[in-house]
Length: 233
Ligand SMILES: Cc1cc2nc3c(=O)[nH]c(=O)nc-3n(C[C@H](O)[C@H](O)[C@H](O)COP(=O)(O)O)c2cc1C
Image (cartoon, rainbow, N blue to C red; front, side):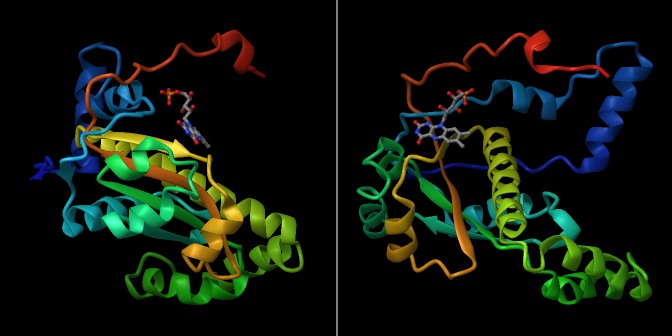
């Protein structure tokens, strides 16, 4: 078994400085973030001998949770399936897909049904830190109640949006660390909810495997022409 060394994360202000310097030189604003996005592809084959420590898994999730959520709900939970025993429980539920056993970790990305009543609690640290004035809290809670209360479709849409944004952020963090990732919807959702005891308000949005790739993975596939997917209005 081997562990990987993860490079220190470039601060957001460092990245901004790079973009500004590039713009001043008249060079197209490419930067490490764009390169990370452009070079990601969905992996199938992983080196099963490479593991991630629990500290590395925690850091991956910590960075992921700086992704945005509606009203700062942070309506997500991450189940890190990383032991052989837990992987064996997940594998048949996830169509026996190879990343489950071979990748260092597979995250069950859970989105939680949007519930405006948690907003005061979620915003309290912002108020305490002086980011948001206390009197603004109802200005976020009231519209959120209007949007979600007794609107199950909106609650679920938000859970899926949140989980999808988290999964995306996580895959790019993994890529920036030189790791592969696999988003997966190929699983039996009901069995997953039972086996990993998801709460009633939790939706299993996606699985994301992460680990060191081994040779044989496809490079990123060509995309549809921009003219088909972009409307400039
Ligand atoms: C929501 C979602 C679900 C996916 N489910 C699976 C899956 O169950 N198994 C799999 O091998 N790939 C899965 N993929 C990977 C896609 O096939 C892949 O992202 C797509 O073909 C584009 O290739 P690229 O990611 O390498 O650019 C999934 C991707 C997404 C975004």
